Amino acid sequence: MIEREKLDKVKHRFQEVESLMADPEVANDPDRMRELGQEHSRLEEVVEAIDRYERLLDERDELEGMIRDESGEMEALAKEELEQLETKLPAVEGDLKQKLIPKDPEEEKNAIVEIRAGAGGDEASLFAGDLFRLYTQYAKQQGWTYELIDASPGTQGGFREVIFAVKGEDVYGTLKYEAGVHRVQRVPETESSGRIHTSAATVAVLPEAEEVDVDINPSDLTIETFKATGPGGQSVNTTDSAVRIKHAPSGVEVSCQDEKSQHKNRSKAMRVLRSRVYEKKREEQQAEREEARRSMVGSGDRSAKIRTYNFPQDRVTDHRLEGGQKNHSLQPIMDGEIDPIIDALRAEEHAEKLANL
Image (cartoon, rainbow, N blue to C red):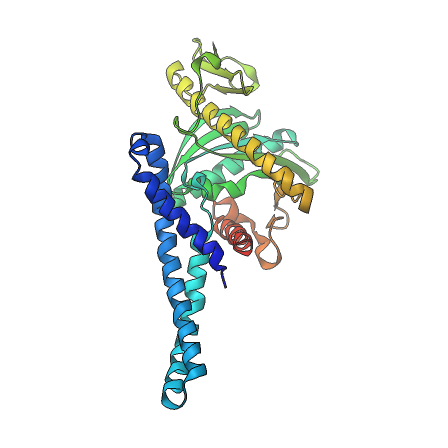
């Protein structure tokens, strides 16, 4: 059973938001009104679910009172109605719990995905290329679109680094589970002795920040242009079309050379820079909260080695999951069919949040 006090707090906040939206001073602030409007829309749905739940609880109390006070036909009728009500209550309570879980507004945003080759030399770059293919295939399956922002090719193929944007519904809320270190175990094509190598690549997933999310002062930016380079560092362009932007307050630096146009490279670089600065601010806020939590429950960082792709054994193991959800066939995953893993991680996260309500 959900505590009435907790439900009363939600209803009180809903009334408070309605009062604020009716305040003429607040009505003249478009940003504040937009923020309150979004909160009102979310809370309205929750309050409707609370009303359904509380009506059932009140009905149950009445029927239990009738069973205590009445006899004969009235008592039998009350018992029958109570039995029917008890079958409805778990579903209504479950629906309310789901709605009470605070929704992270970041989850609906588009995402910037950054894949970097880690330990393992050329094989790590090839694996980074495999991960890029995996995620672009997944994006197509979801009906999303993606746009290459910047890429540094590996000397034997793949990428030393590749950055791309993904647009669609709930992109960040879905791809955020892919952030971390991905490890691969396989025999490289260049390995004549058949020895298995272990390589790694890191995946970073950032919510794509909009201009309203982060305020960047142009005077804080240092912008440089240079000639684009290909694998091995050779120049591939005769003009200074590549762009490097540094944000002095945060120390964030972004380069982009994917386009032939300096203007387009600058625009893409700013998108990445804005998202990285935004993410840095979010991480600083989360770090403060985590420090307090860690002092009580210890660290449970699961973002290090999140997944191993074992080619000889045709198996992908997600180290954050347990039991039958932990291991998967390799080829479907490499073809972008990662929904079973993401669904399991999302369900686990929801269960954890529900337990803390």
